[in-house]
Length: 410
Image (cartoon, rainbow, N blue to C red):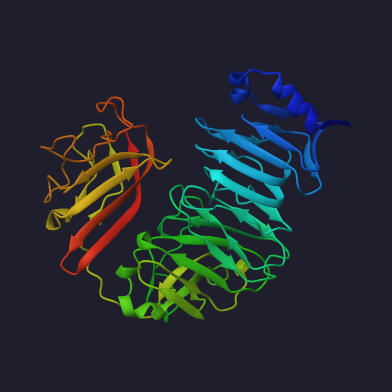
C-alpha cells in the first residue's frame, strides 16, 4: 500500500500558483493512503475524491475546505476520516459519501449538505460531540450522525436556518442520526410514503403542517425539538397555551401519528422548545410537534407554492390569496444560498377573485424575475428551482409571519 503523507501535499500545493490552487481537486486513488499527522494542517481548495484511504494519526491535525466562489464536493468509494474539519466554503460542501470527524468541526462559512434521500450519507461525529460556530449559515443541511455517550444537539437545519434537535446521554452509543425538513408531512419530498396528518390517535388534536425531523437510533431517549417564528406555532396554540403542545411520531407499526408526550416546554410561540417522553426513535418514521387541544383556525391566507414563468395565464405569478386584506406587508424571496432575489413592500394579488393570471406588471408581483441587488439584468428569469419566501404582515391582532418554499418552473 502506498502512503502519502500530509507534508507531501503541502509541498506540492505550495509549488502551484494561487489560481491553480483554488481550482485543484484531490483524487486519492484506490490503494493509496492520505494520512494527516500530529498538528499538521491541510488546506483543500477543490473537490476531494476519495477512492483510497484518507485518515488521521492523532487527534490534533486539521483539514480545511476553502472556497469563496464555488461549492465543493466530497465523493468517492470510501469515507474520509478527519480529526478536525474546517468548513469555509461560502457555497457549501456537498457530501456524496459519508465523512467521519473524530475531534471536532469548525464552521466558518457555509453548510455541509447531504442528500436527504440517502440518510446513510451523513457527516458523522464519532467519539466527539464538538462543533463550533453553528448558525443559520453554518450547519448541516441534511443528515448528521453522532456516536458517543454524551447528550447531543444535532446542528441540523435546511438551506436557510439552523433547526436543531437533541437526544439524551447514551442515546447514541450505537449511533443516532437526524435531519430537519421544512416541509408538510403530508407531502414529504425525500420519503417513499406520505404521513397523513389526519391519520392520528384520538388524543391528538393536530399535527403541524410546517416541519418535521427524521431521528434514527435504537436506544430509548427523550428528544427535544425546537421552533422559531417560521414554525408558525401561533397558528396552532395561543400565546399562553404552549404547554398543550406535544411531540408526535409517525408509528411504523400503526401507520399513524401517536403521542410521544411533553415532559417540558419553554419559550413563547415565536421561539421555544419541547421535550418528549421516552421513546425508541427507530419505531418512528419521523417526529414533529402536535397538540392535544383543538383550536379553531381561520386561514387568513392561501399561499400557492409554485409558479411557471411561461405566460400561459395559469400560475404565472406568486399568488397569495387574501393578501389584499393586509396591505401592511413585506415579502422577501431568497435563493438556496440565502441571496435576496426579490423584495416587495405592500405585495398584492392583482386577480383576487380568479386563478387566471391577467393584467399584472412583472414587478408588482413575483413572476420568477429578480429585483434583488445581485441581479445583473432584471429582465432575465431566475433559474428553475426551489426558493424560500418570508412574508411579514400586520393584522388587527398583531404581527404575523409566514414562510416556506416556492418552486419556480418554466
